Image (cartoon, rainbow, N blue to C red):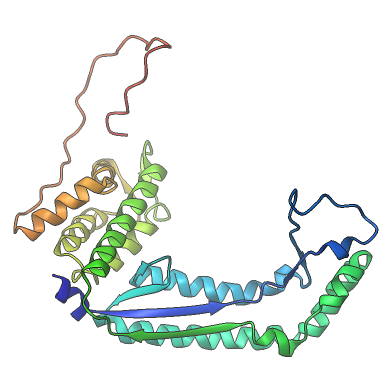
Length: 296
């Protein structure tokens, strides 16, 4: 299984750096003002460039990460991404487009830099004494922006294989929990409610090489999501089935059972039984803990 993972995947290292537009505050910025000693407080930072000027270039970074999250698995806090070999060309093409957009936004940011910086200084004229000494130039700031990436073929490693499987399971569980919390008790789940499940489906379709059980989960999601109405919503019995499925998928031990069953060649049976109807119970005394909800 380990060899199959590395034969069918590609590693990706992504490095995106942005200038913060801030500098650390120093005690000398508050000349003639008595400050508490350093072991009591630590000073924060001062902004030397308007925050809103960074939004276009920050949005490129956000779009890049959002795209990668839809096709790849993040390992070690995003230091490495694992992508299916079959999608390598698609991912490389998308990243080239993001780099091009990043470069364009950076050039536009730098072309307006001096004007924007002077405008910020004017807006904060009262504090110019602690801002002016730290102003940057377009040339110095340009070096603080970076967008680079490279793909590489990984050597087989039991630890990385286990980490990759664990990361996939964590993501399935986390998304299932979030969507469950957003739709439980509702009579209808809208297209917006189901967007994350839809993205998870698409991602799982390319991750069969991680664990065969991933395909079992994706197929079960697809059966239910295929019952959406023309507006992309789920309701009635189909919504009930999705909620029951999410309850199972957000449970790490059940996810492991699914993988183990698939690995052993057993068709895993998801449970969609309705909760038993019960008679009304008397009020719970204040000193008695409540039982967990039966299924919602």
